Length: 88
View: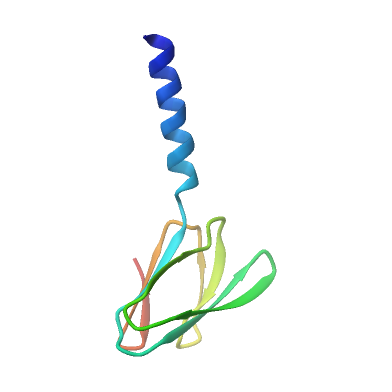
């Protein structure tokens, strides 16, 4: 029984660690774009109206629609509303 509990605890920790990624939610009625820099590589993350995506599992920099740049660890949610992005 003790081995089972230790194994179950280890499995839980392994699964919970793998599930962390930042997410972006576009609450606007028009598409928005974020620029994501991860590992020295820049990519455009296009979000359709109402879309939610996960990205940045190991930390990254995000350039918001207004040009502001923020560092993310991978656990945040970027919420876009009224053309303005906020980190929650």
